[in-house]
Length: 157
Image (tube, rainbow, N blue to C red; front, side, top):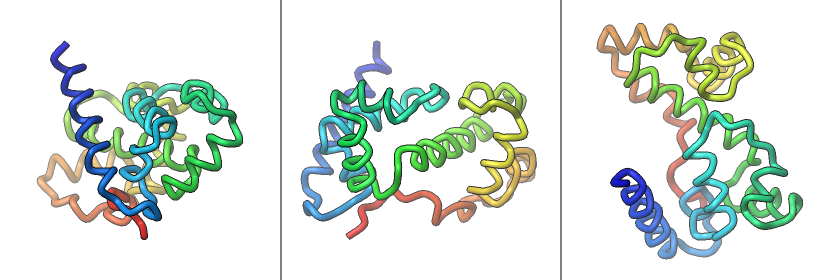
């Protein structure tokens, strides 16, 4: 119950911050102010391992597939599939940092068909494999710069 309340408060805080952004801004924070796209982002963030399709997200957001795809891409700055892939890698990095799940379990939890597919996607985005990332974490390496350009948290004007 407390977790759900915190989720709601967090979403409201983000929406409040998003309303202060200029209308021409793009990025996930700007997209959060859009009711349908904000709903889709919440779904992706809450269940990154779900087998999301554009059709499923559009239906859950309450708009047509075409409207959803166009609005999502315009507001977020990338297609839903690219955003989902990027979010899954960020979720994987968090899980590698905070858990001792084996890589096959992580891959399954995050919606990858295999550990190899997971490793390839992770490396493409963060320049190292999940095993290398975990080993670097264990050695105390500063990984704050890994994928810094990959994480697009601010609005694009």
